[in-house]
Length: 112
Image (cartoon, rainbow, N blue to C red; front, side):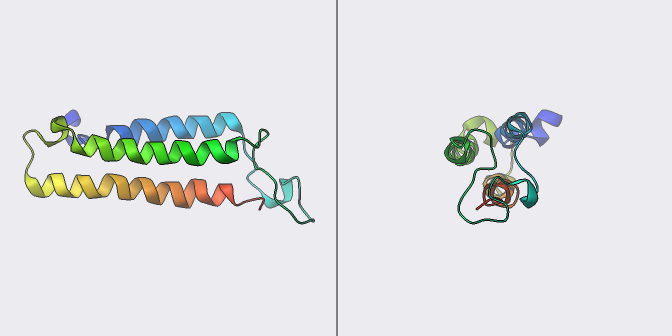
């Protein structure tokens, strides 16, 4: 029963959990006063390794693409009504974009 309810949302949930674990492991700056350029100007990274300023948005983009691909798989549409398929196909990528922009996007501009 729970597998049917989450059909079409597995990559959203598993990928989102993996991104949260990665974010905790990277331990980014979460307060402007902790930024390396606080009180000055210029750009600084919220991560110890500035390469994550590029890697994280690429991972987020890949996550959203995988969610879109999951919505086209026949397994997600088996024994489900068309309106439910449409709602899931729209809700999963939209939720992923909102989470990416609101949570991770806010973090990415913290020290810029």
